[in-house]
Image 1 (tube, rainbow, N blue to C red):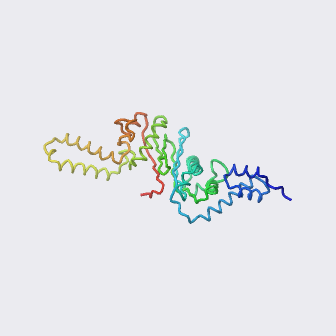
Image 2: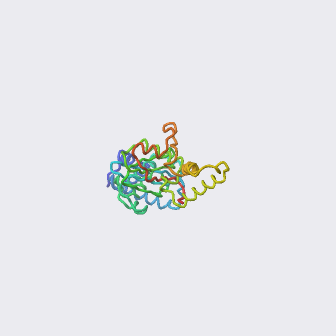
Image 3: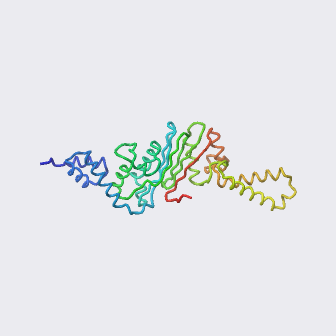
Length: 287
């Protein structure tokens, strides 16, 4: 006759998995008190539950980010779940951050590829790691999208509600966590379209220049001004227009901390040249 499972064993399994006490007892009963087999059994049950909830909508979620400037790797992920309270839970926050670290480290080619990779934290593959949290929170959860970067200097910012996150990559200089976090927070708030003027497509730049010249020509006050003065006026107006969409041309959002300082100037002072940023917003449709 098998040895009865003790309350201490049930509590130990509960502490390791966060699963309901009754389910932990069932797992141990099914596996003759073997803790590791019981954990595998719980994983299999969580996987089945995930399939059962497959049709549920995942409109909520959060962004997770990870970077390691010593290793020159970084990643940002968007995780989805069913409800806002679950998206704010400690388990889901940890999951998003863990998967960002996994993506940065393992560099999967796609979401499908990531799910089958051995999880960097151990304990099975990435889907197993997700299923562990599904088993606790009892909602469908999906790794929706991600991007990984390498070879640069990185910083990140996640908005307090987790719905918007930014990862920025620079070259040159030394890591500056505070400055790069401030720049990433600026990007989260102002959502520029381009990193620098060099990134603005030629047709867009030509259109903006034409609009500036048309405005100057239409102003009678400019009729008698020499060409070199008109050129300076045009440069100033174009710079103002570019500041609406180009990161390096924008004034730092935190004006008290960075008075009269553009993003480009703040980064240049630290010896950093921005080359790319990734901004994710939960539920945003890619253009």
